[in-house]
Image 1: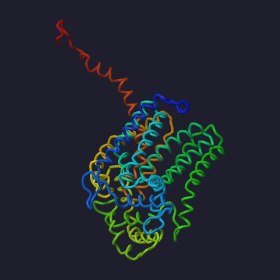
Image 2 (image 1 turned 180 degrees about the vertical axis):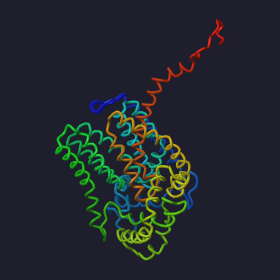
Image 3 (image 1 turned 30 degrees about the vertical axis):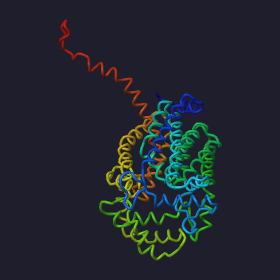
Image 4 (image 1 turned 120 degrees about the horizontal axis):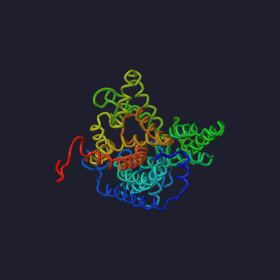
Length: 459
């Protein structure tokens, strides 16, 4: 069924109560799956094995800063050191739970698992608005069961918040397309601001989506379209402004969204990631712990250590700039499973701490859902519906890998977009098969030309 923009506006304006009860059931089952994974997985030892999860590194830092917020001490980590290692959304979320007494990795992982219900619900709402009830239900099932989504909800990482934000961005993007008002522009800007406060690539969403959608609003005057774009951007900036202001005033050196630029540069600009079988990946965590750069730092704030790490990476990058196009291509190919997917699954387990079975299942499911999702984008385009709210999430994730390193969790927002589009594609495919399969079967069963059948039925 082809849907015009006017059809979309009508569909989005109705409340479909019969639609939401199945979605609620699917969301509850999705949370149950996530909680079961939390219950089954044990903390990893020094060497991750089996289905364990990592309780150190970023997960430890999220919990530590969240506790600092719960105690009223602000964004602080070790020994009261100011922290901006990540955007603040997950810090705040975990801090709220710790404020009411939820402590320990298992309890906090259960808290982040609850975010999966919100992701499922919003994904279903977007897919329904694009392809009808069945598309919404299909997308909800995929969002509830896709390992690439639920693993982020149980490893205590920021992607669990970003996935909710990504779904809300898509929903608000289509709402903006339908209403084309200042209020809808503000809602879209706020959603993009939330995404940026969850993961830094969220900052790319507002300009991509707002400009693309406004360009298609041809019935509006040019200045009105420009005004809507400005409203989206201004609201997104206002949403992140308190965090930016805080970082500008509490560190020794200027800091924007995070203080991990230098760390990322060091991990991805070294011989191991420019040449050999680790091409396009990240390596060298020992450089952050025992290397000469860290040893020379002493006790300094995050902005200073980050600047020194960036300086340590700059020399190698400058000497090997000619190799960069190959490296960037490998980074992107790694993220999307087009280059060394088996090694990526192993890295997801051993480096990212996502468990061996979830890591393998995630890549197998991605091999099915990604092509189906891309087909869904084509279906929406052919129906003359805007695709920028979904494509922007794909672009943001790809850009992040290109400038950093190939990493599965950088695809978190893109996976949300693919699940939405896959729900639309699955229903479209089913409709085509239902319409044509009976005639195909009839043709296959019909006697061939030139054959005869006797009275007894034998040819």
